[in-house]
Length: 354
Ligand code: ATP
Image (cartoon, rainbow, N blue to C red; front, side):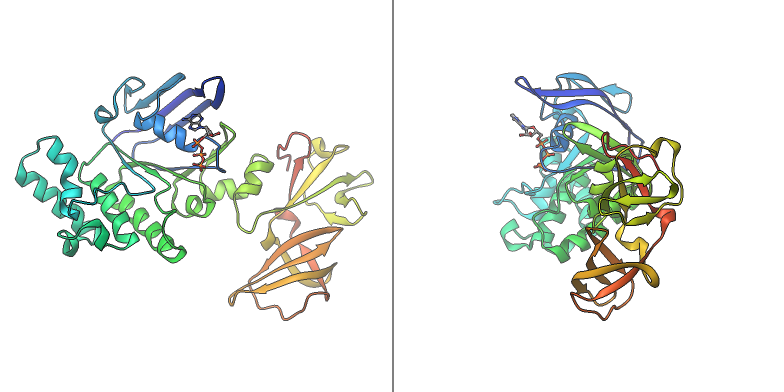
């Protein structure tokens, strides 16, 4: 196993820069997820690590080797793709054995490695089947088996779950995480799905427009987003963002455009006198007769919780309550805000101030 380092890595397609100086340190054995919206450059970064795309500037290291100029086969990595890339005319066993056969490994070793991987992935009974005879989840497992048999220094995953239905995705998420706990192989995983990132990663790298916005443990990013982009991207439903300013006469009050005062627990000196965004996660509001009045626009009970959208201070805010709320659109509820969890962002730079 080995760690991976990206040092000021850049990539342009022609004159068009898509990776604009990326630094990421990945520890030996860590599960790191690159996440960001479509087009942010995460797949390009992964493909550069795999050796499928050359590097315009900077350095990529696997362990203590700079791999910039190494062909993919010499990097000691194994990649699992979104479309599985299985050979349709080969059985599950042969698909899994293929890279070892290419490397001329002894037959007994190949059989042993395929057997072990099949056991880990629950594929032992399917080794004689062809890909067309498998479900989507089973195919995905074969693609992972093909990576496992090689016992690489690093696993790379490029959106491996995006072709699966929602239920299977949840199940496979747990399987991949368990697999990592078992094998402890350094893993770099790309997805646009922040839930996948939150639930699976040791460390998340949030990317946007060719740069790294923030790197951190999932809950650290959730609780302490560096800026508006990360705050809006991590968390579902998304953080409510309300424009306004601090009340010059009361540092504990944030005034929205219509003059509603929202509570603030800690006001950094730097927050005074500037345009701000009040960041409030949906779960940090509660029903309280002494709270602020808000008119319900939409109410969505999910069984174990209630999500609703209500008009508060001239804004539609999303609330999530861990209880059943019996109410109808058009009714007024009263919301108390847990000010200790409110963030303030500089509206001009997006940077978090509180
Ligand atoms: P997605 O989630 O949609 O796959 P991504 O974050 O993985 O997006 P990339 O595929 O890395 O994004 O693409 C980053 C940018 O580079 C995009 O603007 C894309 O159009 C551009 N790009 C990717 N490959 C090429 C190429 N071969 N030639 C020119 N531009 C490219």
